[in-house]
Image (cartoon, rainbow, N blue to C red; front, side, top):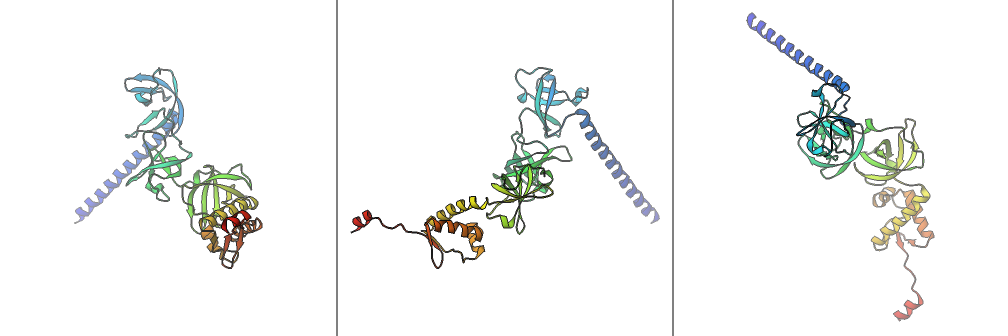
Length: 331
C-alpha cells in the first residue's frame, strides 16, 4: 500500500515537473519572439518600407535587417511589381499567413494595428466573425471581443490589435483605443459612430472615429444602434477630455428642422395628429422623437406662420380658403 502511494506521489511530481518545463519553454519562446521582433525591426500589422534582398521564382524576400537571410520576409510573386529588382524599396503591410509566418503584401488595408475603422462583416462562424479590411485574407473578430453580436452584411466601428500569437485581430471594445485630446469645443458639430448603446444610461460614441464621446439618455431623441452614424452637437467638454454630446442642434436651428418635420408628419397623417401642448411628454417623444419643449417650440412657429391650428385633441393643418376663381367654378 505504501509503495502504491509512493508511486502516485512520484507520478504527480513528474507531471508537475513536465508542466513546469513546458511553461518555461513557452515563456522563453514568447520572450524570444518579442526580442526577435525588435531585432528584425518589422512590425506586424503595420505598413513599412522594406528593401528587396533576393528575387526567387515564387516572389521576393525582403530584408528584415538582421543580416540573417532566414529572417527575411516573403513577398509573394503576385504582389511583386513587374520591374522589381534587388535593392528596391517597397511599402508593404506585414501580417501572418495560415501557418503563422510573417508575410508581406503590397495591398494597403483600410486599418492598421492601433487604429479604428468602419468595416463590413463578411461572415459569422462558430469561432467568431470575419471583416473586410481590404486584403485577400479577412480580419478576424473573436467571439470574446464582441461586446454585442455583429450581423453579417452590417458595418460597425472596430479597433485592431495584436493577439498573443502576434496576429492582427479586431475588437468592438473601443474605450481603451479612443483619445481624449480632441480639438472640439462646446457648440461644435461633429460626426459620430455609435459603438455601445446602453439602455437607461445613454449612447457611447466615437467622434470622428477617433475621440471618446457620450450622448446622455436625455439628449438622445432617436432609436440608435451600434454602427449607426450621425451628426452630433458638443454640449460639454469634460475635465477628462471626453465629449458630452446631443443629437439635437442649437434651439433656433433645431426649431426650423422640427417645424419642417412636424409639417411632414401632418401631411403623412391626413393633416392632423392627436398631440398638443397638453400631451404626455413620453407620448410626444415616442411618436415624434422630440422633447415636449422642442415640440411646443415647433408648434409655436407653425402657429405663428399660420400653417396649423390647434384643436381640443391635437393639431391640424389649416385648410386654405377658397379663392373667388374656385367659387365661380363650384357654383
